[in-house]
Image (tube, rainbow, N blue to C red; front, side):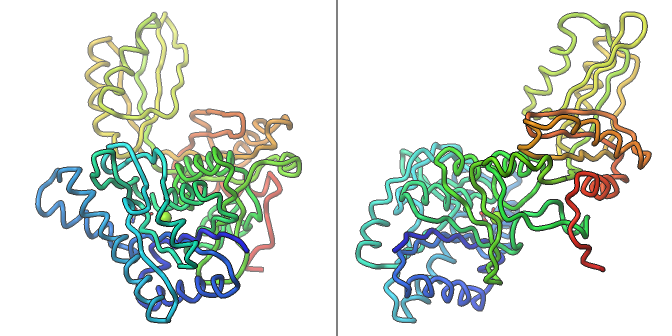
Length: 409
Ligand code: ASP
Ligand code: MG
């Protein structure tokens, strides 16, 4: 018999009917003799609602108290499911983060899991109970309630699966798996039967919202195979696993686009040691994370420096750039919010060449200008004009042979 960890996201527990659906799926496994640990998110929209409430109290809610508040979302669903299971005459028990001994650091709102004791979980499983754990929450060394960052119940599930050496970790969500591209953008996108941890990490950081990035890091570190699947169908989803030789044969696994960044250029700054540091230091000190940076030589001992920042930090970054620009005598500081980053990702890039060339010529054929380029071992990203993002995704999807059957055909 297997030990199964099953996590259900916010839309899967959005109301009592859906919680009944979760109960049905859970008892089906239990009745077959499996041990089942269920990890739950809050009902869809509840976490956002709690944040809004807190903001009605004060613009900057105290972070410790905010975590106490946010953790109630998952406490609610865990209690409701355990209650329902008991009413169906199944032995079940709900556990909050601290009761499952999910120990974290003290970074309220974005805590990291340090280790998981899971004694109560094991005891309950030994007594053939279905264990329902509130996701997204843990507790620090002082016993304070902490939360793991938005989407953090994915990480709760993977971490608990790792600590129990579970046979499977299933993440039930409202999509039926990981796709070669966003199906809303590209009608020829296909569901991937398997994807490697590294590809999933790249795609999550590029904005694919299927799994919280930290959960994938955890899964990779502890080698937990993660099955992403729909809670509304019995169909197999996507397995997130270690890369194997078959995966390396495929050059590109997925195409993504992301409109969450903005670009800032300082024109004709002195081409001298220390200038890049002068610009980037205050940006970093403001807590702004810079993604891409390029520098192109200009005539007359000058250079242009361009970088991208999250759109949410754009105004602040631009203000800093304008201030530093004056100090170092930049000719001009230009901001551009209408950009998109399109990326192709695949572990096969490690052993295939010509990927960049194919990407650039595909964009050129569509008359799309490339403003910036960055690469990792398994990814190439280009910044282009925002209005071409969808066109670029479709063209690249097709150029790298990812097109499936068109759903309109
Ligand atoms: N309820 C939390 C959130 O909305 C955690 C989660 O759903 O994974 O971010
Ligand atoms: Mg989620």
